Amino acid sequence: MPTTPVRSLQPWFRTLNDVGDRLDWEELFDNRHPVELDIGCGRGLFVVTASERNPQRNYVGLEIDYREGRRAATRLMKRRSANARIIGGDCRIALSERIDPGSVAAAHVYFPDPWWKKRHHKRRLFTQEFVDLLARILEDGGEVHSWTDVAEYFDVIRSLMDGHPHFTPLAPPDERTPEHDMDYQTSFERKKRRLGLPIYRGRWQRCPRPDSD
Ligand SMILES: C[S@@+](CC[C@H](N)C(=O)[O-])C[C@H]1O[C@@H](n2cnc3c(N)ncnc32)[C@H](O)[C@@H]1O
Image (cartoon, rainbow, N blue to C red; front, side, top):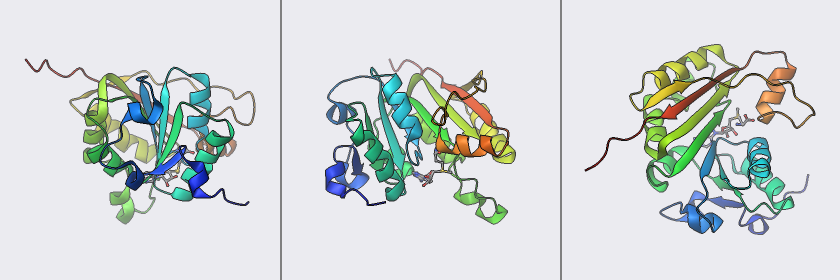
């Protein structure tokens, strides 16, 4: 498949280096609508469908693999999407240094890499530090959605999230029967469900910050 030249993918694909010191949502979207992040967005199925379904919300996919991120951005470019963008780079840098505290309405983390071998578990995205970063960027009442097919990793995610003082668990969504090939939350959900694997779904809410005065 011929790859689209990077420059022509702007504004749909930019790297963290391109955006500078701060991810300014208003500058990115030219409005102040709520922003939802898809962390590790892969080829962008969630960003594409959610942004089409909810034009009054903005969607930002963060993806460390530029090739995957460009694929996602190409889908957005073909639709001339006004409310979705892909940022190439490490989400941990974005969350810790580039995103304003309390500026995100929801963070979606679907099928984070499981790093199967025990000695590689330290490479997993979900750690205490990562959950602290989610708490930092989410607004009061903002939500975290995370799904995986890996039961053991889901236990880790659930205990980190349930045990965090700034999050409270919410009822997860029910499994839906897809109506067509693109009617899945993400490409990985499609892949795993076609293999007949169970999917574990979690949802948590950011607790209100105490009044600062
Ligand atoms: C297993 S894939 C899931 C992709 C997509 N969420 C889905 O459900 O189809 C995990 C994705 O997370 C991305 N990823 C891993 N570590 C990341 C990081 N530190 N920052 C941003 N993306 C990351 C990977 O490149 C990969 O595209």
